[in-house]
Amino acid sequence: MAIYRSPLSKVFSDRLVSWSPLSLIRNHLSLHSASPHPLRSLTLFASLSTTSHDASSHKTDFRWKPMCLYHTQGKCTKTDDPIHLEKFNHDCSRELQLNTAELSKISSQNFDFFLVLDLEGRVEILEFPVLMISAKTSEVEEIFHRFARPSKMSEQRINEYIEGKYGKFGVDRVWHDTAIPFKEVIQQFEAWLTQHHLWMGGKLNRAAFVTCGNWDLKTKVPQQCEVSKMKLPPYFREWINIKDVYLNFYNRRATGMVTMMRELQIPLWGSHHLGIDDTKNITRVLQRMLVDGASMQITARRNPNSPGDVHFLFKNRIR
Ligand SMILES: [Zn+2]
Image (cartoon, rainbow, N blue to C red):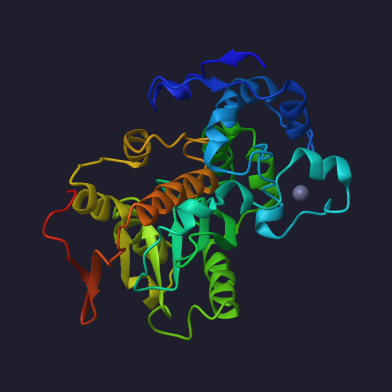
């Protein structure tokens, strides 16, 4: 396997990122239909793979492969096709599995589940990925992932926006095939929360959102709710900003996910700024913190009488 330093890898340290087998990339591009930009996608897919030593804390026979982004959204029609299953990951729990020694170090938490969330889309929300993590075992219990279609943008603007954002990962086609309005994303998310007994109206039930920074739930979701003409759902009124817990636990200031991963020597897998991959990488940071003995606490809460006011619960925090 040839070694390749991808342009993106420079962002997250001098770590070498190994090149995915070409066949894997080609097959990803021909999934369901061909990408309109195969060459550009090919260049950036270099960032998608991992080195074998990266898997040292995981099962030895683990082989990284890209997620089927139709499957994560409950829309894969090829789950009985062995070739497709060989090429694409349909279960991300294995790559996020801890070994027995790590599992035994996890201390008890105030929550039963963490909902790791990392939104994508600056103008409007484009992607809404959530991993449901058991606080006891730190393992992935469930996944909720949807691509969201902007409601206040012309078709032409959407096409340009998606090409710029997702074309470079080779997943613009799956975005166009699957994206639904944000309002529907939230309706489906609420059905999912209810199905997993995480919510019965009001606050979450023994679960908490974990985000990297305050932007997702303090800024972006309320903005999108306004654009989509809907009320801010009550379960979004408090969250754990992992960077604040990180700062207080390790006594080190990390400005972002990549810095935390570098400092903890956790390899960055997948494509940075593909929401589902960032969510998995934030989950890796969370898992490490749990194994190291951190206790996850709510770091930000909206005033119930004045939801625009956010109260930050940690004195020592990232600003
Ligand atoms: Zn699939």
